[in-house]
Structures are given as structure tokens and as C-alpha cells.
Image (tube, rainbow, N blue to C red):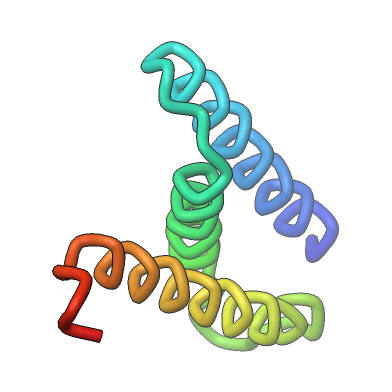
Length: 91
């Protein structure tokens, strides 16, 4: 039972990543930062959609550090984009 749920999770994340690559390629805006943000959003969506109701399996608890690193990376990307928009003499 757990293997089927894990396989569904892996399939969902893989489908999201392939869809993100195709969408960014079709739009002509394939950048590493955009792909990172889209993949993080996809990971969070798939984690929530496949979350069990009662017991959290051990393999799902191992996702928490990965999510934390992803959110940290997202914060760094947002700060870099904001600093790029602000005028030169402000910071």
C-alpha cells in the first residue's frame, strides 16, 4: 500500500516537472530561477494532494528538509529580484 502511494507521489512530481519544462520551453522563458520556483510549487502541491489523513510514513517526513531548503532558495530568489528592481542608491 505504501509503495503504491509513494509511486503516485513520484509520478505526480515527475509529471509536474515535465509539464513545467514544456510550458517554459513553449513560452520561450526557460530560466533556472523560473524552473526552480515552478518545481517547488509543484512539489508543494503534490505533497498536499497526496498527504495521508492518519499516519505520516517515514519517507514523507524525509521531505521536510527538502521543502525547507526549497523555501530558503525561494526566499533568496525573491530577495534578489526585489534588489534588482530597487534603485541603485537605496542599498
